[in-house]
Image (tube, rainbow, N blue to C red; front, side):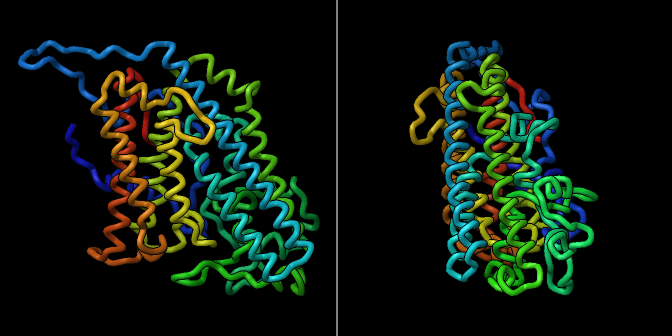
Length: 418
């Protein structure tokens, strides 16, 4: 089946440009789509097949209830396994951070950074389980805004260049005590860029501001030794890590074998498959290609990258793509069962083959990024770095449209909008 890519959709860019840089005031968080409707019509759908030389429409048989149930169950197993792995690596990070706080040296700081990167990479896969009001981003009690909100105004938390007294850490009058309750209450208080918790707050407290065009931040270890607020900074970092694990555990418990959300999810297999396709479709076209890539490409601002303090954004993109592909193929160590790909192949094998090829292309393009995210977005038009970035963005955007078509082939309707 031949398709024409929409390339960087103007409407996508217009919406995406609402996101601003890590250190600016106006921003949107990763929890923006928590209330998105999962039942509106797909952006693109697959036209019904017709018999050769005839106007008679031939509708492919839809998936059986048994196949839908098997696919939903496999997905639930995959989600539970991924969150378990993320909690395990985040716990290793917690141990390293506590070791660093107890004995702050360049070496222990380096280990804490390394474990943040490892845990972050595991978490990147789980972002494929968002955007359908599941336990991670349920509008009532989903903790996604505490876990992964961005971009972050770093001056809300700690000192920045030009303002050495900025932030909660350096304000013992306004924040006489640093507790979990204080940090949770402060998160996004007064503005969406006022991020005080989650992956990126931890990242900032480890790396500091990124003031380099080709390297990550370089926070000095003296911030945790001789600085006047070293103790408050260490306490803040320790509490953040504990809160992150608590929030991840809350989500994981909902997907456990006896979890409340898992029980609800599996009770209606057709809706379950609709939700999982909505999650990977909207992550592809709306969140990843749009807010995380198109915005940065348009602004050319290095602070419009997702993990802007550690320069881990290339890995963020790659892991999101890997997570999307993992869901569609149900490929994860220890997981064996029916996949969405198996469902689509039964009703439209050509579409399934095209989508699988597109997912492979997206992954290959992100694995082959020739430079850092900030270098690629700053490259001039026609430069190899610029072209590599655009090729990946366009492929990820296309895969979102194909996922919507796959849903339509199954008789389901999804939206790619955030």
